[in-house]
Image 1 (spheres, rainbow, N blue to C red):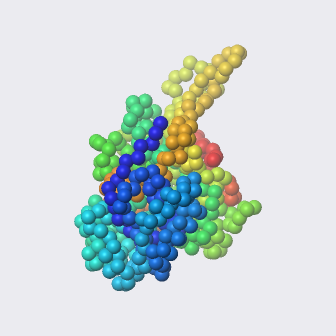
Image 2: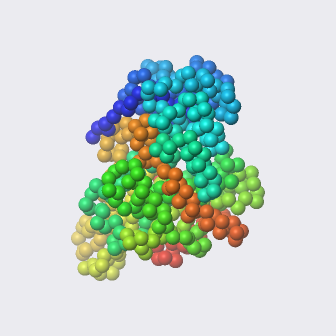
Image 3: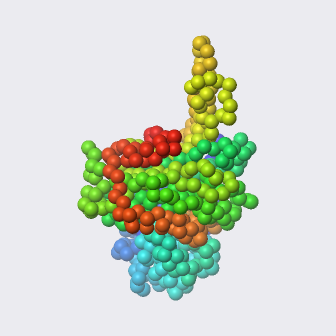
Length: 484
């Protein structure tokens, strides 16, 4: 199987925050991969813009070092790297002042696709958007890419949307969530809507429950000050997990178009029921043998911010009425794993007696690591001595299915940036979608703050607080094992 590369139009991509961590670790190494694959057409340019007092040569040297540090096998292609570096330019710019804007205006071309990546703090979005227009750099066809967080509550999200809408139309705004660029997340839509095998079963007649888990082994580390004002709910659930929930629960869109897909996702968010307090478990990692506690990492000995959250959600519509969705995410867990699990109901009637009847089909979609999916089916255990049933997976990993071509599958940032250049918003969040997510999230956060709820401590390297297990046990269910 060969991964096809479809070139895009010639473009100028301006990366505000072009010397920052995200640009060096993800954006520019990813663009180098797209360059080597032949997807970046000749004449395209990447322009870094930041406060750092660098010239073009200094910036090119910085990015060459970043690709050498954070790139994959492609970093050994010295000739390709030299050609890629030649596409880079740099402008030292003052986001809140006038410095550098005239120079940027003289560099950015009018006759190619213009994209502006705001890899900066959200507090600067308005200043950048305003100056792009007052300096006649952006036009009606320009696109802007904005990173999360998209506000910290409904009020700030609305204010941010209004700020961007002052200068750019909604069709020009690309709110990026890298989870939606993962190959397996998109395969989720292909599995659902491209196979007669699954779509007829994708409802409350056949599905017992659905689990979505995003577990990380790292703590908050150097992000402690930011994270302590955010927490797992704002940092992960309101965006990443919400998007996964929407993709697995939404109705089939009329066609695979940006607004059609996002319309159906919005309906899911609006159908989410309020979550009862006893269906929410918040946790904080304690010190382990190999690291600090959350409060030490956050440098806040009295912090009530959660590094773990688990909850039971319900969707009030015809398809999913009565089917619980269990969401779980946490820092310093036993393994790094992101997985969506669809657990189907027991057989209505089994011809097998006793324990042999207690088997379920389970579809597991692995987002990371080892992207792929498997379907657990029941077969007879080989050998004589009666009918003994066992569960075995029909397993598909991209590494096995694609072979050497798996290495060529673009990562999330690569794919999404190329979608920006194409003008395809399907995998980006719309403004009303963001606001609807906050409308559901805010009452939950306000509720536990009003109750002065204290997160439960859990051991670093574990699966989270025992209360999360108890929440599932009350329903006669259990979490899937977290494993790499």
